[in-house]
Image 1 (cartoon, rainbow, N blue to C red):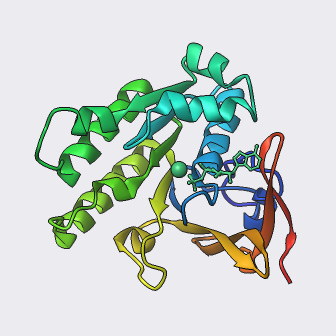
Image 2 (image 1 turned 90 degrees about the vertical axis):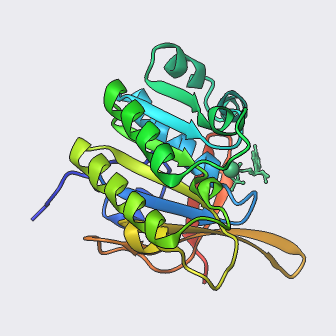
Length: 231
Ligand SMILES: Nc1ncnc2c1ncn2[C@@H]1O[C@H](COP(=O)(O)OP(=O)(O)O)[C@@H](O)[C@H]1O
Ligand SMILES: [Mg+2]
């Protein structure tokens, strides 16, 4: 009855909302507006694995991943130990993709590179931040769907639990990745009266009896932590 073992995210209060954690080998989308906490969420997920001796990788498509680790240092100074011992690989794919070329990269080549890295390094937890960076007006939706579906199938076969970060562009529009992934977590960040409120919502989580209510969360000294339901 217990079913599959769950992958704990390391985000205090979150695993309890989703039957104990993610399903191994599945892919989850974390989406929300700028500053809502997506990158912090993703880093906490990786560091939780690295702490337990797993190999993890943060694939950055825009920011310098070293800066991301530096931001995270405040929540866990051990982050650099994990980088040093190889349990947290920082992969600056953005620099490689946009460094010299004038032409935007293709979904196929980006996905292939990430798959190769994850496979060669024996990665257990993977983050791609932000996946939306490989979307262009020229992107063919059919090609994207096919590439993403193939990629998700491969990482599942490799048993890699993945968090895909997506920038929220249009509130009323769901993109390919929302449908293809096994779970969608929305980080809300909005004005209520004169105060900004942070709240997390599990929109979709396959094979999981999950909460659907909005849960307030905060940035504590250890990173994101879930408080109570927003009533
Ligand atoms: N120590 C902290 N205390 C309070 N809020 C913080 C702290 N560190 C970061 N933040 C908040 O988190 C935001 C950045 O979070 P981040 O995970 O990078 O968001 P996103 O990736 O969604 O843009 C900052 O803009 C700030 O509002
Ligand atoms: Mg970010």
